[in-house]
Amino acid sequence: MTRSFLAKNPSVLAFLAILALFTLVVTVLAEGSGSGVISTSFVKTLGKTLCLCLIALAMDLVWGYAGVLSLGHFAFFALGGYMIGMWLMYARTEDIVIQSLSGSELPPTAEEIAAGIGNQIFGVVGGSEIPAIWHFAGSLPAQLALVVLVPGLLAALFGWLAFRSRVTGVYLSILTQAMTLALALYLFQNDSGLRGNNGLSGLQNIPGLGQVSQSVLSIWFFWASAAALGMAYLLAAWIVSGKFGSALRAIRDDEARVRFLGYSVESYKLFIFTLTAVIAAIAGALYYPQAGIINPAELAPIASIYLAVWVAIGGRGRLYGAVIGAAFVSLLSSWFTGGRAPDIPLGFYTIKWVDWWSIALGLSFVLVTLFAPKGIGGLFDLVQGRLAPARGGADLGPDDGSLQEREALK
Image 1 (cartoon, helix red, strand yellow):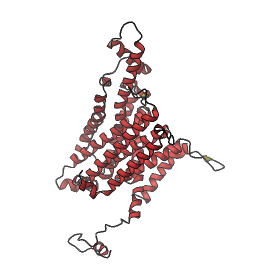
Image 2 (tube, one colour; image 1 turned 135 degrees about the horizontal axis):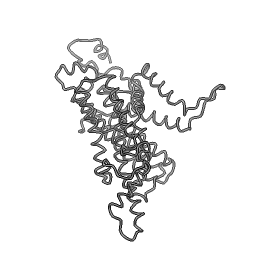
Image 3 (spheres, one colour; image 1 turned 60 degrees about the horizontal axis):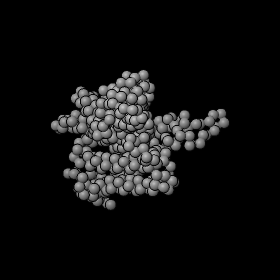
Image 4 (cartoon, helix red, strand yellow; image 1 turned 90 degrees about the vertical axis):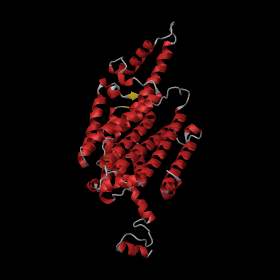
């Protein structure tokens, strides 16, 4: 990612500049900075929106550029949230248990502390033993590593089995959806080791930072989310702008021909599938401390379908389109489902957006697919007049085509 790369891709610099300006404006106006124009709850909403933009960027890489319609990337998103949530809940509970036992005549033993932590966390599901999967929960570096390793290994294993068997198209989408559903059903069980339907809660309380207000913490997480989105966008743009990106687009357009030319199609798809799973997991690890709670419902297959809708509405195959689509739909969803949108009385019936938002979103997806397949991002083509490359009559190939003749007139 050298200076020449940024010079050849001014849209990347434009995106990073807009993101930096947006971050600065929110920081200045946030309640945590003292101005109070933007409430803490809305700062958290904006931070979560940036995380959703991050997973939409991952979805655009795997679907818009590689042609792999994954309906399971929200599973990786939720797994990232569970990995960091385990440390947040364990460390906070450990502080509470140690403080409660500090008044005893004898210092508490490690066994007493572990028993207290087990009762506090798993008493809600009728248990007291700390499951084996929580072995590293007391270590932040270990759990941060698991944020990457667990979703990455799962994606690599699933992708290797699926791509090696040359499962493509709708069959692959169904398989990814089945993986997500199976994982969600497992986590709903109380003996899954992750508190079943109760999930992990209180994640907004960061251990060791009890004296820091939520207004300040919200700004910190907002900064982290913006930084992660900026770095991921830079990485994604670098990937798709080179030869690797050309190979991905070729696989998307004609996989059989690329394989015939001698390329290892499975390796390309496996790499991008695993990479985007890791990006989705990082987005989840930043999202759920701002949301405060995570449970197996977050893994529902419908969430991954929503993700595909965001990317389609924003413009598939355009990195900025995925970000625009996720931000646009997620903020609209918060407005409509949060009761802020006024109801529409029709006399015989009153349209309540809380009930009708999902239908409106599905209808918009159908309309975009039929009449605006380039999504919101396609509007930039109209504004910039990029209906044809402005080559000024440059040689387009061995034959003199009509396109070349028209460009020579410019």
